[in-house]
Image (tube, rainbow, N blue to C red; front, side, top):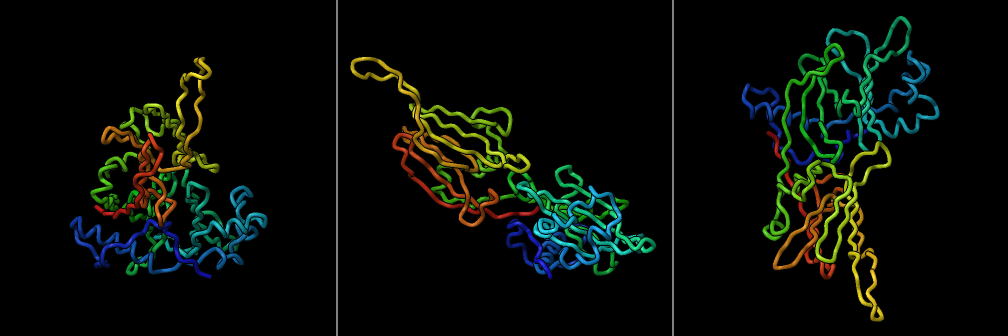
Length: 337
């Protein structure tokens, strides 16, 4: 059984396929890296299901804790989280080797294990083990070089906070240590209409993507609670963390009427604040003053992709009437440099 490699919607339409062998120019290096990104889209990897009979709890020579995912109680989850299990060929090693990548948790964390076959023991040993949350490995895909026959790796470097692509890297694994041989950085370019630019800017979207709310007066990024007072309204946004891994994800936004004093039966009494509007979890928010009115501007999930801020909806609410005065969608291009 084969499984098309999962690029988590981050591999968008790439540049025109280009030459395999790059010159020393930066442009050629970018084209070379993008060639392999496109190559991965067109090819398939074998999965753990293809190797289950020979790579399992009984055939792996390792402590129980190091092969726990191969226990019968865990096999179902192991297969579900598996991205690939495939043969690799490292320079200086003649034994058979298998690389196996798992993507787990709400943080989409990668876990990579490379197995080496011991012909004397007729057992698999764990040659390398890397955990994404500890920075030991990234989302890497092995590729066999068409000339040397050795395996190099393509890494899709991701920001685990917002699931945005940071870069594409070509790596080698030498003496169990990663070495970057080529890298191209990703830059997000939002295609905003003139009307959308009246409410938000690409620069502001970038700050929201980084959980940077200095534009609202918060000095530290990832503020746990954002509280804004606008006339008789109070807007409270609480940072939402995923249940698994406690990853910062987005903001849960609620609009309240402020506590105030009113006259009832010729007596001044305090009227408690109450919830007027619940917006749920959104990517980010801001207050815009326009034509002597205050508006709550927030960006939310896009029409196509609910996993990343690269595809978003733009929403504007008149805080006096609580009516939506603008709602649209915006996409972006990813440029590599």
